Structures are given as structure tokens and as C-alpha cells.
Length: 601
Image 1 (cartoon, rainbow, N blue to C red):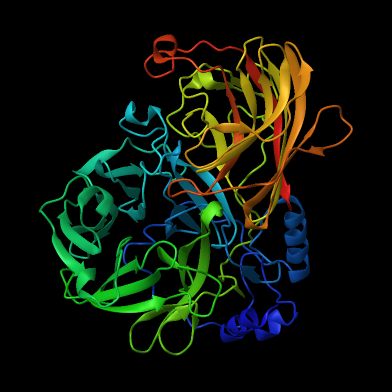
Image 2 (cartoon, rainbow, N blue to C red):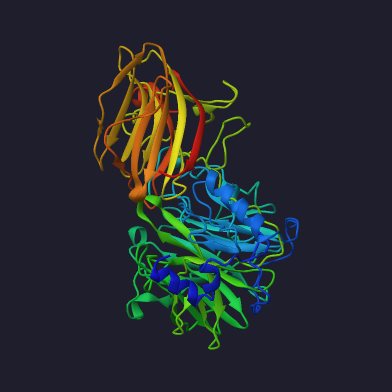
């Protein structure tokens, strides 16, 4: 442990544990004799009891440690250390702009998804450390035709999740169309179709509050790229049914009037002990901070304080997220950190209320401005929790794709099948006018980078006699690289190709001839620190051989890089393919036997 990490742990009161002492307790939390209870979560957060919690009861720290060790051997990243502590980030993948609530025994988290489909992922945890994906609130993006092609940087921006009156509510913005709401009684779905709350450009980051007197409000920020303004928060009265705004809104916090404030956005609105609170980040995605604003009136005036910043930690821009409380009264704060190609990973900070009435997140240096902690005791919950992380691997043996998979645009069922070849994924080689550039191709099936280092492997068979048809394993962002099979007009070849920013694909290794109408290969990409990717292939079962030079992955537009699979036919014009491309006839198909992700790069 480096000196900085040691100081952070000692500040959090965990010196003994960090020095190597086992902390006994349930898998669901640390076993401390006592802890000061919080003063209750944000108004309306917990709501009525939801799903029944997992079976209660503690297990010995030794068993918990064994489970964590086993999980780390299988999964690319595990936040649960198995000794009553966790390490950050608790979600080491691009679950950006998180918001969360607790309902009964479970915590639920949603994240922005931008152009990815399905959108608005919903995650669940019993302890804020071990998470799984339980569904998506959006099966497609609307307007449907608009999102039939990748709209990089558009789509679903920062959402807010609330539980009110027995219903889960997600308010989310599309910066090009407005603010929308979807609802469900079961967070795993089904969710209602999006309902417009306010239409317009540049409206982002909405968050509702149902007050004690039955009145409802909604606060939001502004995107300068669409509206020409930003750095301010606007509050509206909202109908209690959440379907419409009742006024034109009033600016309640103007960042231009606050020294040093830029890019004030991402507000979350709460009420506690008669105070209205707006938790909001400022300073920008990469190097920003978290502020808290409070007022006795929802309309202000608000006073502000920075409550979480990088300080002397390695965690740049710790901000934008959710305040949640455990059933036992502990307060916690989830936020993101932008890590370029890895996206916006999610950290969990302890949160407490100081004697002066202000919150502080992370390690408190007695100045009220918290610093992110690398390691901390887990939230204390009355549950036995399985050590886990969001799924990555897929054997393609189920009736549908795993919930980790996402397309670059609204999907067409003709793109894929799990029934044509049972136990394998079939992707159609459909002609497309954008087949030459995978950044523009909607039918790329990907998932988030799951850790800083990992290895992904697959086995693919390409069956085609059409020149230009191709399929393979891809790492995709603003730049991309892929390895796989391509019909070159004479035969199928093994190829490795890359594309720089705003540039066409080029060969990155000499193609290797394989077969004339059908060929198979195993493919691997190993991702190391700095998102350096090394592709390899096994064509004869004798082991993997490297392909070309390493490739450094880059972020997409507001999202991290993805790793995944694709198949496409040759380039064709719209007259041949059809207006949206959905009428395209397959020019062959690719069969993927499995997709396996393991630790280490």
C-alpha cells in the first residue's frame, strides 16, 4: 500500500484492517460493534418496502474471504475484499452519471446510456458493493427512426431514479428533444414508454422531489451545446403525477455568480430536517468536484459548499452521483470518475453529517471537504450477499442475450439469432452503406470495458461467398481495431485492421488466407494498463499468435470504449439496402461459439 492510500485508510479509521488484520463479519457488511446511526435518508427515498431482502445472517470472515478470492479468479474486477472491506471503484466500468435509491432491502442504480441500446440500465445490490444488472428501462430510443443509426453523444444523458407512491420513476434527458419520464412497479421491468415532461433542446440532468405537503418539483441543468447556456440550475413546479411542468421555471443556482464555478450540472434534489438540498457537480467531467447547496426554501436562496474533491488522491473529478442511506441509518455517496477509454467508473464514499449541518463525503480532513477513499469498511446491512460484479461472459446458451450486451443504435431482430445454431450466436452479414466504418454501423454488439486489465476471447466461423463480408472481435471508440475473418473476393482471410480518429480502416497485419466458403478462428484481445490492446488469433488449435502491433483504445463520445462482436456484409448504397437498412438481405453469417472475459491483460 502506498503512503497516500495508507493515509486515506487511517483517516477512515481502518488502520488495523489495512495493516492486515482480518475484519470478521457477514458478506453483506463489516462487523463493527457499533456505529453512529445516520439521521435518515433523503425524503421519499426508501418508500414502502419493496422486494424481500436476501436471506439474513452473517458468515465468518474466512468464508467471505474465500468467496472473494474465488470471484477474483473468475471476474475481471471484484470490489468486495472478503474481509469486511471494499475497494474503489465498486463498479469498475462505464456506468456513468449514477443515481440510486434504496427500497426495502435492496439498492437500485441507473446510469446514462447515451446512444446505446437497450438504454437506461438498472442495477441492483444488497450492500452497495456487489452489483448485478437486472434490466433496462428503455428497449429502444425514441424517435425510433432518428436512433436507427448511431447518434454518438446523443440519446440518454444523466437520469434520476426515485421511488414514490409505490412506483419507480426515472426522469431522463435527451439533450436534443427534452425531458422524459418512465415508470415501473418492478425495477426489472417492464417500464412504461417514455412520456415527455418538457420538450426542448439543451434540457439535461432532471431530478424530481415530492415534498411533504404533496407538491412536486423538478430541477434541471442546461447543455450549452444545444441551448447556448449552462452553469445554472432551473427549478420548476411539477404536477404530482410527474407528467408535466407547471411553470416556466426559475434559476435557483447561478454558477456564473459563484467564484470558480464552471459547468454546474447534474443536480439531485433532496429534503432533510426542513432543509432543501441540491447536490450538484461543477468544474467539468474530468477535473470537477462535488458541491452541496442548501436552503430553507425550495426556491432559495441557496448557500454552497464543496463537499468532495480530488485533494491529494489519485481520483480525478470525483463528482455527480447519489446520496443513499442504509436501513440502519448509514449515509453513503455514489459518484463517478472519468477514466478516458474506460469510461466513467463508480466509486462509493462514506458520508456523514458534520456538527455544522453540512455533509461530507469520503475522508474528512476536518475542513468539510472530503477526499475519495481507496478502501473502506463495507456498509453494514442485515444480509448475506454474494460476492459478484455485473456479468461479462456469455456462452450463448440462453434464450436471449445477456443483459451486458448493447447495440450502437436501435436494434433489428434480423441482426442476430440464438436459435439458428443452438448454443451459438449467429450474426447476419447484412450489406450496409456504412459497412466500411464500424463507428457508423448500428449492428455492432458490444459491452463496457469491465476492468483496467482483462482478456476477452471468442470463437467465430464465417460462412459466405460474398466479397466484403466480414466478422470478428472489435474494440471500438473514437478509434477502433478489430481482428477476424473477411472474404477478399477469392477466399476468406484472417485480418487485423485499425482506424484512427476520423480516418478510414487500414490493414495492421498481413492477411492470412484460410478457406474459400467457410473458415473458423479463435480470437483474443488482452487489455492492459492504459487501455493498450493486444490482439491474437489461433487458426489451427495450436495456440494464440499475436496480430500486428498493440492498439491503444480511446473513448467514444461521452462514453468509454466497448469490446464486442460484429458481422457485416459488403458496402451497399441505400437503394440496395433500403431506407433504414432493415430490408437488407444477409450475405452470409457469422457463428460465435461463446464470449469469455477473464481477469488480467
